Image 1 (cartoon, rainbow, N blue to C red):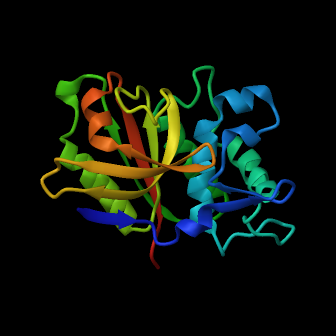
Image 2 (cartoon, one colour):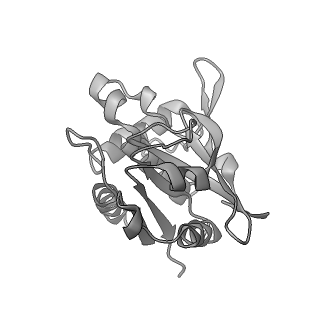
Length: 214
């Protein structure tokens, strides 16, 4: 199988210094308010995107980096102001990518981005190979992929109406099998992407943001 991944998945290792527990990526359960915990998957994934872009470059005013939960929560609260859930959450890629682009512009960062939507209507969907190519290009640019799943179909490791962060891809050249590793709930999970694509009834979308080369 062909394999691709972001260059430094260890950037997503986040220590909760109060409990000494290690998490992988930001998780919405860290938010202080109930509504944020209920609807915060989009801002949390946006925080993962920003965290990776800025690792070892952007520092908080305190001079601290992102390697612990408290600092990541500061980032999550900041990102929330740009990627802000509606009453239906961040339920489309437009809300997500416009928010992320506003955030990185405000912070003086220059990124390339791309978006691929998977419509509800199966006849309107891009070919599965197009989706694989989209994710592969993102990972080759060393960018994680934000993944909106509106319906998980038969893939039990996914929650519906939920954003997760893709950090790796492995697939057969003929597109007969494909798996991605995702960050979700502070864990690294592996899902069957082809199973999701074939069985989701509502579709979803994908977006990536890569630092522009000077």
